[in-house]
Length: 612
Image (tube, rainbow, N blue to C red; front, side, top):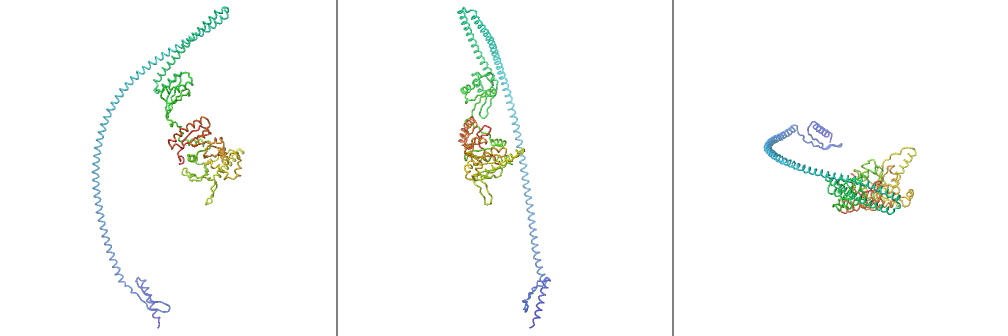
């Protein structure tokens, strides 16, 4: 059977289907099989005609127009509903506005009525106050007139007393003048008697009995005259005392600041022959000071007697009376025992820092654990960092704990040298030990000192080094174990004396040379006994030393520069202890011993007071 006609027909049908598809018709003509060996039968799908497609499209258009009409109808309904709602809201707003305007009008009227009522009340009150003021003015004028009359009478009485006093003084002066003349006359008569006695002895030697009688009579006459002179002198002293007492009473009456206590003091002084004038009186924090001016010659030793008898004359504590700048100062301390505690200024640490920074002075803080020495050191570092932002702080800390770090102005300060041995971290960074920090201190001051020596040899000015501040904590612990962690050859290189420690000698040398090298040290230890640091007593005087509470008695006994300061500190310490036992917040105190000033007790500043 010849298959070529079938193949040709099959191919023709396939091409027609492709052409129909290209012209926009959906024609599907798929041969059943097309192979190189033969052609099977095929099926040709029925292709819709153009008319059918147009009818389908027309149906779709009608459906779409119907839906569009429905949507327009819904939109129109919604628009009407919206317009209705807006009108209703506008109506409600109008009703609210009318209600508000009505209430506003009513409130304004009520406010106006209230204002008119208050104005009437104020007017009535003004009239009442004016009437009272008028009555007060009349009363004051009456009292003023009465006082003027009373003061005029008082002044007249004082003038009369003054005139009487002046008359008395004139009489005393006249009596003194007469006594002076009488004394001169007595001296002349004594001289004449002595001459007469001499003449009798020379010219009337033979009449010995008569001469002896004349001498006896002359001596009796001289004794009688001496008795008269002593009696007159006693009367003059009595008149002077009466005169001065009257004058002091008159002066006290005139002085507005004088009071009964001043009068009693002047009376006690007058009993010991000291006449005085009142100058001033002031009371500061419970201590009353009265100043008097002596008006005659007086013995300072009499003040001790006055101090003893004065509490018996007036109810006061034992006063202190002393001569000061040509005046007599009477100090009466009326404070309770605890009120006599001499607190240092609240900013005493700032004052101490300014003194230390000015002269490059070093500090040592010595105190037991838990008494605040670490917090005090942190506060001092806060002052250093805030006041000297260019200063380099080197922190040496043998202890490894959470308390080794602190923050100043938001910057974290961690130990630069920590622990007893150097440690290499997992990231390969080596953390040097506290002993490496001590060796670095030696290296720094040695290098800077060599630079200064070379400048001196070359006749050049020495450079100004940047300041380096070393904070060394737990110094006693650090020095007690140095031979366990420092090579013996390194220790031998310092050529230590008996009792010296390696670290103690380095710190001592750094302090001795540090002022010109820009190096200062703040060392923290526990015991006030300097031998544990390998120092002697004189080495500690190179520090501004602060002893914490438990160390104060030994420190005052061993390091107070004078006996007076030692007794003063120990006496004040008893009061501080009593206050601390009554108030636990006052338990943190210290004894500050500057290098060139008197020491004092002070409360520690609050932790972190100078860190922010």
